Length: 185
Image 1 (cartoon, rainbow, N blue to C red):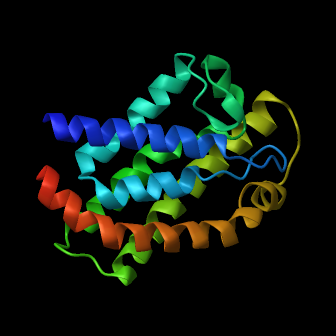
Image 2 (cartoon, rainbow, N blue to C red):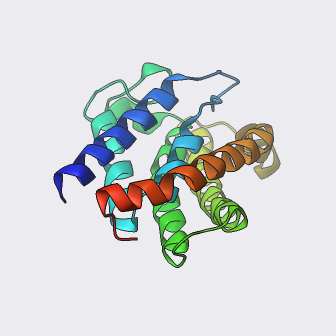
């Protein structure tokens, strides 16, 4: 990676960490702007870089820096029902970047379609992990519908808005970033 790519990657990690702190606790999964940041990372960075940024964010949090939602960090984060969503950031950003890699200048519609698939992956990984933590580790007995209603339903409207706003921003920033940093998508 070149210096400009490293700088952009560091800025994206910082964006993700900041968006994690903007949180509204509503049960085991807080509402944050993390999804917005992950979508933007996938929209603005090549696949390899998007995977590196989201993996680095996870590693920074797991070694103890308070970059996760509500200022948490450390290995104990692995026991949070919400941690599966953080794991899902890696494939979500990678899938987003891979889909958009096919287009030299993606349209709003293409950004939104890629966001749908990335968010779907995020939900699948997050809900499976949440089910494991709540039902196996914490020995609760929640049905799939209960997990779905606390881990997905309240977030759908916000995730639609995050996809739309990240796409609008990416439409404005992708070409200048591509030209100034010479990112190869």
